[in-house]
Amino acid sequence: MYIKPLYIGRVSKEAADARALARKHVRAPEAHRAAILEAARAAFAERGYARATIREIAGRAGVTHGLVMRHFGSKEQLFLAAVPGPRDLPELLPGPAKTLPDRIARAFVARMERSDGNDPFLALIRSAASDERAATALYAAMRRTSTEAYRTVLTGPDADERIDLLASHLIGVAFSRYVLRSGPVAEMAPERLVAYLARTLRCVLLPFEDGA
Image (cartoon, rainbow, N blue to C red):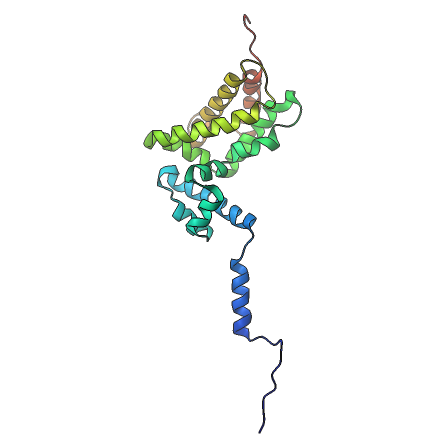
């Protein structure tokens, strides 16, 4: 009687495919986090903060609802992590104080131009009309994060006022150029906008002297 030899270590094609599929779905926590953030930015930009859901974002990222909550805790914290501005400040702020306005202006315009109107920050601006309460809470959280970062390089009794004026100025530019998309600011070449922004931000960030 002939017995077919058994080759130890030889794996069937079906078993190999199954293992490959399993490996594909096993990702490191960093990869999960990156996928969730990418999905969140897309969802918030397309649907706004109020309409985007954790379940939808999890589906886009290919993870479970529970995994999203484990990484970020709440939709608000996920939104704050997904908005590039506040989380990029630790890398942007270090450097010569005299070139800070230029760095802020260049980074802001570059980020907005890349987003083509789909930055989560713009979704927040748009949502202010439909969900004022949520927009106010999110903006307050973003302002706290930004203020803490800017305080590491801006000093003086009026530092908080200057930080808030900086944010207000950028919001106004974002609304005119990337939400309304109409008027001279919207039609300006990016490099020209950077130059104007750097000039105005230099005035905003300069400490105010009483009696000046």
